[in-house]
Image 1 (cartoon, rainbow, N blue to C red):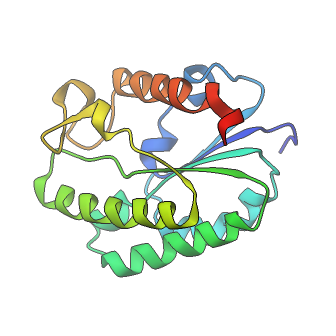
Image 2: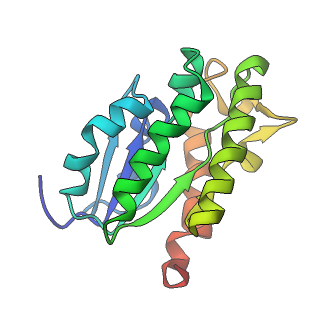
Amino acid sequence: MKKNIQIVMLGDFLTARGDWKNLLEKEDCIVNLGIDGDTTKGILNRIDSVINLEEKILFLMVGVNDLCCSIPLVEIFQNYTKILEKLEKTNIKLIIQAILLTQMKAVNKKILEFNLMLEEYCKNKQLIFFDINPYLCEDNLLKELYTTDGLHLNLKAYEVWAEKIKESLLLNLEKF
């Protein structure tokens, strides 16, 4: 893989299905390493190959597949923190993204609980925590306007997500 990669998008199907090169207007320096069906354990197993890309910025969102498979929150959080511990040893700027809510209330209850744990961890470790949920959700549910089936996103959702990344983060890299 080429070595001029500046941004890596890492995660599960939500990340995998985004055309991030076009959405973020970074054709020559971004790679999407999202994988449909991926879990925190899957990312943990391949994190060393991600680190070898020597990217400058890494956006991470993973965990909804774990939650949908009823993996205990404690186990998901342990895997997630192991991923972050490995990444923290590098010079990569980490942007930890909250798990996106769905239209499934039972899953969302776990997502909200996990996101609180993750946000607190990021606060304690002085890591950037980015939550796209306020822009795509209402009353703790993914808006129908942004989903194809209550879980997967449509193009409009990806456009909002990318715009918020550009507005909130990429334009302000000097702040972090």
